[in-house]
Image (cartoon, rainbow, N blue to C red; front, side):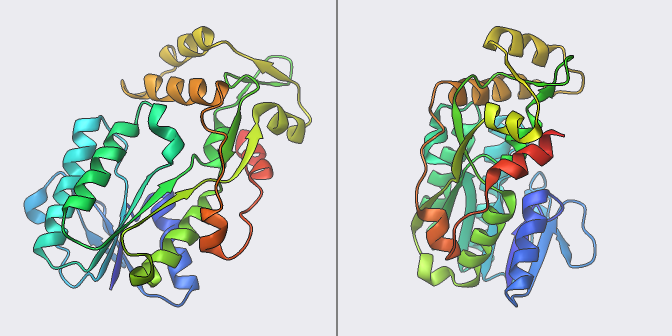
Length: 265
């Protein structure tokens, strides 16, 4: 049995859908269970039940500070070892993302996965095209503002990452102890703006950080996380692409430009 954690999140939902499209049965796991979803609360390790799971797709529980994320992932892996899970697929962060403010939790989890003694596959996911578009903000003149300068992001569609996870989870033995760097086609904020037919205005990083700090609802870890994405894109650290995604999918990845533009509207 395949179990996908974070089943109520966007990537978890899409991964289960991709598995079903391949004819695979996939149970979900979440702290808010529903039909077809097993209750899984990584903050309550004693309650975790992974019995009967042959392949665990561990979708990163990254919406928190590093120590919380690592503790959650450690609890999931301990349960996987205890309950005899046969293979762990972990959705990590692209290799080029080591400069990002949330990279540490991913790399620490990779070490935990590799040390678990279980067969594993690590999917180093690039940043979503949907996220890139969503980080563009409307300007007063009908255009869009961004802190990305002229830098490019090798953006990737979330659905492509979900399909790649499904490919691996459906035949994990073929991907045993492999690391895949799943990034897409480099695009710039100016290209997204042009797709929208809107002018693009570059924000400097000081102005962007000021805006982040004044944005209501952001959690304390989020402004530095988002500022690190802006700086890494702006200075060319996230533009590199690889063939890994196309190789796993058996086709060219989706064009990230219209996806990013749709998310920016």
